[in-house]
Amino acid sequence: MKTRKGFTIIELLLAMSFIAVLMVTIAFLVIRITAIYQKGLSTRSVNQVGRNLIDEFNRAVADSPVDGTLDSRDRYFVSIPNAGTQLQGAFCTGRYSFVWNTGTAIKEGRRIQFRNNNGTFSFRLLRLNDAGRTICTRVNAAGGPNLDFRSTTPTEFNSIIPQEMLTLSGADDAPTTDSASESDLALYDLRVFPPTINRLTGHAFFSATFILGTLRGIDITTSGDYCRNISRGLDTDFAYCSINKFNFAMTTMDTGGLEDYYGQ
Image (cartoon, rainbow, N blue to C red; front, side):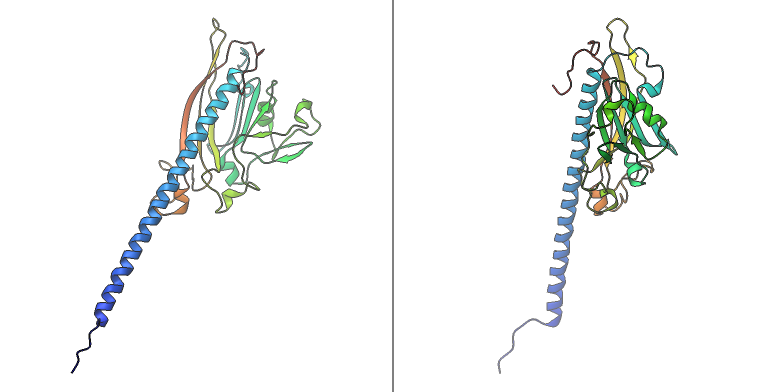
């Protein structure tokens, strides 16, 4: 009589269980490695863009004339807060001006838009030629959703195309979808402190700080760790979340505003 050889049901169940555990472990490791890699991309993007913005601000200030009449904050810096959190702001150097909507304003649907004869523009951070510091005055007085320059004085704002310094994605609604990536960044706060003017050298020194982060996964109102669901290491929002604070100093060049070094 021949003996039948094969696996018992218990042996098959044990083998299948081992294979299932092995596959789950491999899948977990792949997801974990992917999340760590994505987190690294998000952090690198924030740090690189942050350094680029510091260079932009430094060059803009270096090319601006020294102004000894900066005794009023709305002459060079304006911040629009809500419950202690910045929504909008403007920094006016006397040659170039910057205006921004923070990530908080974008997510809450409370951002302002730039409007002129060419249309209405959504923005995160704009740079404009503005020798008269008009942007700071307008932001300080803004009572509506638009910085409106349609047929206004000064006329140089009526027909310009504003220059965006941070990447916009499509209709700029990425914060409300899952399509936001590590390149979708926004300022969450920018502060420029009163300048110190050296009467001997003719230089003015500014110190400033800003917080730059991803639009995805950030909750700036929390304390400590600003990335939502930080305890869930595999959470997609956490992998796409990164935020950093930058402190820097700027100085004007003693040119009297006669030479243009911007972009060189």
